Amino acid sequence: MSTSSGDSMARYPEEPRLSLPPDLVEELTAELPSVADAAVAAIIAEVPTYANALSGPMGEVIRDAVALALGGFVQLGARGDRRSDRPAAASMDGAYQLGRGEARSGRSMEALLAAYRVGSRVSWRQMAVGLVGAGVDSATVAAYAELVFAYMDQLSDQSATGHRDETNESGRARQRMLDALARALVEGQTPEAVAPLASRAEWEPPETLTAVLVPEAQGSALLGLIAPSSLLVDDPASRSQRSVLLVPDAHRSVLLRAVAGHGAVVGPTRPWLEVRASYERARRALSVERESRSATLDTEAHLADLVVTADPDALRDLREQVLAPLAGMSGSTREKLVETLRAWLLHQGRRDAVAATLFVHPQTVRYRMGQLREAYGEELDDPEFVRRATIALG
Image (cartoon, rainbow, N blue to C red; front, side, top):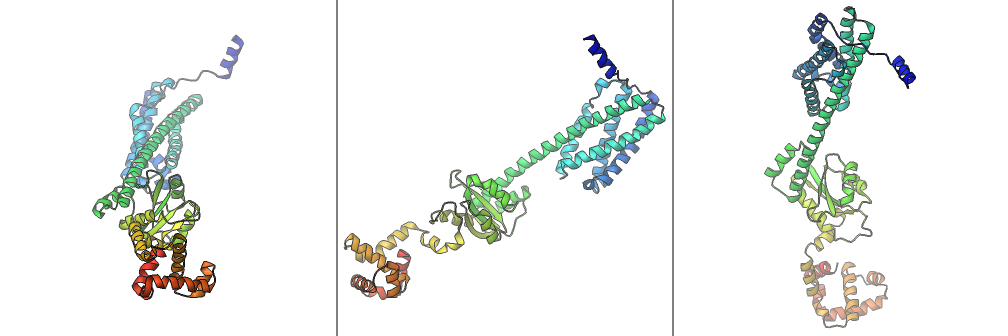
């Protein structure tokens, strides 16, 4: 055991204390403003996103932060205590607030950490010149360098934490505002109510919006495939079974391709403040039959169906009115005559076309039309009746 301990001591010699003479500490402290200026100049030159940011008030904030950090580890060297290498509370708080401020300015964490690396390198180079010039031995300079970079790592970690906290908080806050904006649009709130929500959410209003109903599980995935400024909100009428995408300035064919196979219902394009009309039509279109529930339904391709089914009760009453003359017939006879009347209306009385549609002989069509004329009389030639019957049976 003693041999192992001896080997350990031989392998890891005792580190020198970092006690700097008071006059050297005073000299280094006096040089801090110029060291900070050199660090800022290097950051401007090497980190592109800071090229213009450090020329105004933000530059003074950064210079002050650099000077505060440098002053902190100069004082560490003055104390000569390696166990006290944690930055002071004021420096840690300043680093945290610096990170939050950089996030609010729109600069990335990568840019912030790059600035720390450049600033640390240049600052240490400037300070090392002073240490060597003062005759500080190489072992102490090396140990002090280790202390300096460990110190700066802690400050950069604190700034990264501030940046991350600000990003998360502002992201959550903005998402809440975007959600409120989407709900207001779907609910059809007044422009006076909607416009401030868009402003607070920092959302640039487009010319138009298109409402797209999608299964709830597909909403987030589709949001990433469509325009990034699209809004996503739970469908208020579906009890969390569907979501509503509000797509800005959509090119319809591109949008239809993007949602293909996702069971989407695409409403019409409307001025952005009138998107509730697009949403309402998409909701009504859910009743339109599709070959597959995963197929996309384009409301623009089903306008006639939507018009006819807009008021189901009225359509049912109209159908009863139109078919009233056939009410006294047997079920099978009535069914065949209704089928023939529908085909006759749709084919504008062309007997051969009616026969082909019904898969019967033209003579059968002639016979059935005789029965219909007996039931309806001259109504079959009345344009108003033809219009009503076409809507009722179409």
